[in-house]
Image (cartoon, rainbow, N blue to C red):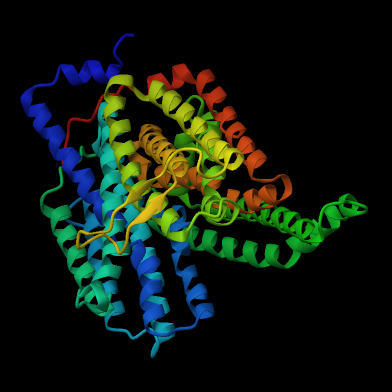
Length: 535
């Protein structure tokens, strides 16, 4: 098997080039850590703080909506392509700005009592989520601009590793620090102040230690048009949501009523299918409305970024592949916890140890192994091999649903306390569960490394923030929107058949990948990089 273009280029590098590559890898690892740190602070850690403050479950559930900015970050990503903070360039400048603002917002959260000033606390949490999503936009753009094609696989896996380690710190270790039984001695305000200081440190690293980027031409558009265009798109999304929320359900009920007449499907499942159709109708109405608003208001950076993407050969096919590549994985993973707890009757401790503790580290290992293999395999062969492994891992859950518990001898995980991670008492783990989850997390980590490298390869450096945010939004379609369909499907056909369907859902992406093999292989070779420097 001939070496990939990435492997051939890697073998020819000088020691100075290898040192520069190590610098780039350290940079994307640290930025992955900075990206993952704020996520739990508006999610798991925040919920733990609210629970400790005695807020009711309904209020805590409502406050989970503060994470919505992560879903809509592509709406303001064009502004981060168009405008450049003075002093440090377009990418590093926005990194420093967002990280310092994040530190300030976290300090304000630390000084705001959730029970005594719930509304102010919620607004600050939304601000943290907005700034964190904005930081993600810039980090994705910087990483894409920084790494040459041959380094994107390993670079994306190191980014995943940094991201996951940060989530362990802010989403897991923080809970141990604030547990009086563990003797951590931290209060939740103290934890948030510490995380704010870490974000200040990240800003210093971004300003001083990150590699400088080749200077590229920023989009040349009228600033006023972009600002007005952004506001117009946001208004269109709000109008679309309000109108679809009011009319989509009634329209879906009218469309499906002939099918439900005399149907043997339970009324509860009929209602769920109706709600799912209403959701799809709402999206189908809102997206064209937002696109119309962008054109009318001349949101030029967004429109030019889209035009630049669709000018490349195979752009539409690539977009379909992006939606489909992780679809089977998303299907299987969307209901994994209820499957293991309810259908398989594994204990919560068993699921927690295998799926959350061991699985997390195996995902990191899979990403690192996948990135290392990509240096030898190249992009297309990695996407194909890792995609096949992802598909095969879904069959593991089908086997578990059919074979049941106890087919493979289990093991006992002893109690341990590492300070940042602990298990209070020995926990027996089913061998079949351990095997299936291990395969799923390893293959998922490898697939993620290749997939992120693929997204990076599709971006034009003039519009990296815009294009990567949009491509990642399409990539999230499976993960975000497959849940309602998966729930209805699992109830309708049963778990074993559900995992067969999730396996078959991976086939279209692999078929497309085979047809696109020459186009994907072309992405493995870097275009001529600009010589001028210092973004």
